[in-house]
Each structure stands twice: as C-alpha cells, then as structure tokens.
Length: 362
Ligand SMILES: NC(=O)c1ccc[n+]([C@@H]2O[C@H](COP(=O)([O-])OP(=O)(O)OC[C@H]3O[C@@H](n4cnc5c(N)ncnc54)[C@H](O)[C@@H]3O)[C@@H](O)[C@H]2O)c1
Ligand SMILES: [Zn+2]
Image (cartoon, rainbow, N blue to C red):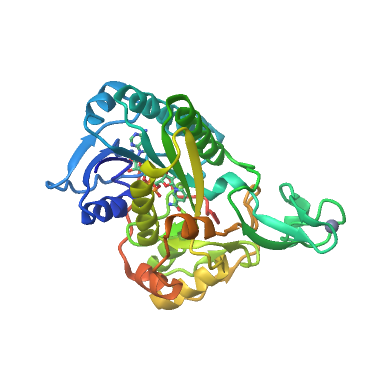
C-alpha cells in the first residue's frame, strides 16, 4: 500500500513510519514540522518521501494524495497548551486541518482513513457508586481538591466512586480545548465516511510513552515531565496523592496497532467510522509511573505534592478488548521493560523559544 502519514515526523509518527515500512508499505510523510513540536527540525531520512507542508494547504495535499491508498492522520497540536489563547491554533490545526484533509481525500478518491483519536474524548473515566451503580461525575469541585479530597463523588449520594474501564460506547465529555478538537476530528471523519461511502477507524490512544517523547513543553504528557525532572537531577513532582489511574501504553505497541488498523480499514463497511480504545489494558497510577521511572533512572524518589489542576480528570483507564477481538492486536511491551527503556532513552529537546510547561498530569 502507499500510505500518507500526516504528522509522520512527530513522536508517534516516527514509530508508525518504520513499522509501516517494515511491513512492505510505501510511506509518504506529510508534516509541517510545527515549532512547538520540533524546536529543532528532525534529521531528514533520504530513503523516505517527505512533504514539508501543512494539512491546511489544499494545493499541496492534492499533489501528495496522488496514488495514495490510505491515510494515517496523526498531525495535530497536542497537549493542554498554555491557556485559552491557544484555542484558535488548536482548532485550526486539528479541525480545519482535518476538514481540509478529508475534502482532499474525497477529491482524490482516497477512501480509507486511520485517525489518531484520544482517550481525552471521554473526560472522566467510568465509575460506579456502591449504591447507585454506573454514574457520571462532573468536574471535581475546587474546594474538594484543596481539601485533598481527590476521588470524584457520586452526584446523588456523595459517596466515593469506584473507577472502572471505559469502553468505546461510553458517552463523550471533552473537558478542554484539545479534547474538544479531538472529538470534532472524529465527528468530521464520521461525516466524511457517510457522505463519501468511505471507511474510517479512530484509534483512541491512551497515555503513550516511549523513546522520542518530547521533553517538558506545555504539549507533552506526564511521563515526560517526570523523565525531564530526573534528567535535571530533581525528584519527579506528583500531583494530588499520586493515585490517579492511567493506561500507559508503549509507543511501539501504539505504532503496531496503527499499522494493524491501516491494513484492516479497507475491509470495514463503507460509510462507517469505528472507534477503538488503544491502551495496554493494565492501569497504573501516576505515582507508580513516577516511582518506576525514578528507580530505573537511578534518581531521587518522587515527591507527592498534593497540588492539583482544575480540569484534570482523576482516573481514565480503558478496556482495549474491542481492538484485541476485532483486529487481533495485542500489546507486547511490559510496563517494567518499557519504563526501564524510557528512563534512559533520549527525549526530543525543547528550545528556549518554547515556554517551560505548567506541569501536566495528563
Ligand atoms: N502522545 C500521546 O500520548 C497521544 C495520546 C492520544 C492521542 N494522540 C494523538 O496522536 C497524534 C500524534 O501525537 P504525537 O504525540 O506524536 O504528537 P507530536 O506533536 O509529536 O506529533 C504531531 C506532528 O504533527 C505535526 N503537525 C501538527 N499540526 C500539523 C498541521 N496542521 N499540518 C501538518 N503537520 C502538522 C507536527 O509537526 C508533529 O510532527 C495526535 O493526533 C495526537 O492527538 C497522542
Ligand atoms: Zn451514590
């Protein structure tokens, strides 16, 4: 297959591209090399087709899509950003960008898409109240967080809720601009599929970590903050009580899932989008990730600060059973092995132009 990979120069893309090539596919990387993602441009691979352009450039897209069988759409502005002033940039890159790409695919007759979705579309994960059963807590109150009461409470009786594994049919509840743009991408891809009789798969990646993860920019994830602290000789700072649960999934497993989806999407029914959680299936706490990284790095033990950010969700862990059952994907990298490798792997460097991050616990 000839596959166009938008965002192919990014963290996940730089693992997807060689994984596709290893399966004999011809890859065209399409990436704007955003300065927020690439303060230092990555080295060019002379053996790979590379288009240095924005997905909002319809003219370049029309040329790049010639002869393409399937598109893997990874290009996006990621992370929580600095503040609401970033909203137009997120919406431009992620939603206008997706709309331009889909319109160009429709013009070119390219009918197969794998979209990099995200678990952020769910907001809080799945919860059960011991009395009221399945429930959906709203955002946590600042008074609760300030008092060190971090577990979301049942909206009916106030009891602490028990977290479970979120499934794809769970209601969506994006809680920040980035999350809203990721959900809109899925809706756009679904509309495109219906309007053109095309096929789309959205892989809702969970917390991806591994070699090549960017260091602590406002756009990076929690594992990378801990790793960057260790690299400075500092103890990782863990928010809340460290018991927030996440599904940390290794980037090579995510790349393998993406290749599997690209090879399967042509067999899906026309006019449909199917979403798949893409996680390890083994929830960990943020505190566990910090401790495992500190130990593997040989650095100071993490400090649990009790700090918090409004808008952070407490627990978000997935069932990735659908991806296993329907597409036959299995994660291969054990948490301990993946963390040990990540503790020593190079990170993508931030430059002075990128402001130091507010710590993210996403
Ligand atoms: N890293 C995670 O934990 C995670 C979790 C869930 C979902 N995702 C999704 O996976 C995808 C890849 O994320 P990543 O972590 O590799 O991020 P990244 O920032 O490392 O890579 C994104 C790439 O897209 C490029 N890009 C951004 N906007 C573009 C545009 N308008 N035109 C062309 N290129 C553009 C950037 O230059 C960059 O190379 C994103 O869609 C992201 O939302 C990532
Ligand atoms: Zn209750």
